[in-house]
Amino acid sequence: MQTETRKLTVNDAQLLRQISIETFQDTFGAQNTAANMQAYLSEAYDLGKLTAELANPESWFYFVFVAGHDEPAGYLKLNVGAAQSEAMGPHALEVERIYIRSAYKHRGLGSAFIQQALKFADDAHKKKIWLGVWEHNEPAKAFYHKWGFEPFSAHSFVMGDDPQTDILMQRSI
Image (cartoon, rainbow, N blue to C red):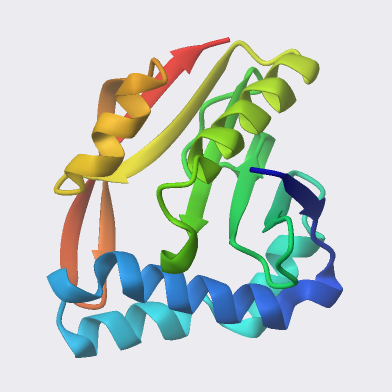
């Protein structure tokens, strides 16, 4: 399958917001209350917040497009330095988000994003790449394990008024 990625700019904030809400609800909506989901979406995908994230020089967002389709199939967010959601130091790259729209799942796009992140980390001379995944998201944990990521810690992730746990996973570059 032919794909193309494109780096986002602040001009993409509204479309990024739309796809972020859609994919997050699709991925986690059934496991959370409507009130907690709405509270999280309102905060995490606030247009001003996303615009600031897009403008951060230590964060990069990418859309992936499938040949023959004009709409993005999903997106990737990478962080270094102070933009990382946990202090992991200057030799780490965080994969903060990989989200694929439901119509495009199981086409290898997540693997393409991991390959892109690994290349980015290698080109930037990082020593490790890491991410957080919800402790109950078994398919995602298995996917990352297949790519060589191993659990090393955990952190709290608050969904509305529900504290949840993300497993932190990493691999060497």
